[in-house]
Amino acid sequence: MKILFLGAGSAATVYGLTPLATAARNAGHQVIMAAPRNVLPDIAALGITPFSATSTPIPHFRTKDRAGNPVTVPDNAVEGRLFTGRWFGRLAAASLEPLLGLAEDWRPDLVVGGTLTYAAPLLAHRLGVPYVRQAWDGKDFDGIDPGAGEELRPELDELGLARLPDPDLFVDISPPSLRPPNALPAQMMRWTPVNQQREVEPWMYTRGEQRRVCVTGGSRGLNFDFLKDMVEKVSALGVEVVVAAPEELAAKLRDELDGVRAGWIPLDVVAPTSDLIVHHSGGATSLTALHFGVPQLSVMESQDNASHGAALDRIADFGAGLSLQPGELTTDRVGAACRELLGDPSYTRQSQILAQEMASLPLPSEVVVALEKLTA
Image (tube, rainbow, N blue to C red):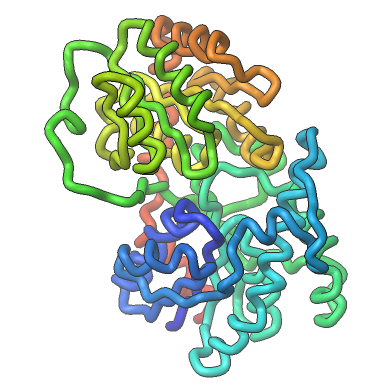
């Protein structure tokens, strides 16, 4: 069987699809993963065959409409979700022609698209093959899909479709306790942390005398001044602070803060040694914290990331972490939230309950059997 996986414009979307793609390849199936050209090195580094769906830089779709006119990020969560759907819709529209060209020579038997890869249902419909939608993180898409449908109206009309096609199978990786009441029926799958690696050092996989807080800067997340102030504020709590961030950002931190450990640190290595993870509302980072049973604090700088908001709120409601909205982002608030999360052991207990739920879900290799049944 030939399976085409579709990622999006960040490495995190590739990492989210990798466990199932790898399991399918290990089961003897042919696998190609298509995504924007900027993330092809990440796909290749994971041993999966990459294909460029578009060479247009991802910021173009987020900041400009199809005519090239500038667009702005809304200042409220509802419009922020629709905005997210629209720009992912523009990415899908730009990807369709290259994907159809690939399909002419390498006809897939099945198309697996990540949460917001809207080219996947359109391509599968056009080819007449099953479409699988796989959640690559805990993102909700109820308020996002309508924005994509509006943006893709020309493509839907061309195919004679009133709306985006439903998947033949939805693969979800959320802990069952965090699935919303109106969640779609799903084939559940155990989530596996995947991230870029580097040579490990002993301090990464061992614990020191102090409690450890891991702060992720994020390639699109926290700006330097805020991150620096936050690291200083959290360090004042008498804990060891480790900052996982792109090297350019990390180098500036090391220059300005004596003794800080900052750099591209494999999160799956350092998370098990951490007592708290502070992150930029990244879906993969949030799931990594849940996977290892570590409390988390999410800080959201923009409503463009509001698609993660409901999932992060459910984590907070379950008692496994806290979440701060854009208007709440001060270093004092972050410091107070860290103090609460470190001081109350119930957050760790609740996080570990979710970790146990995730560990009980079917392995990707088991989900491959469900994919095979779709094309039997």
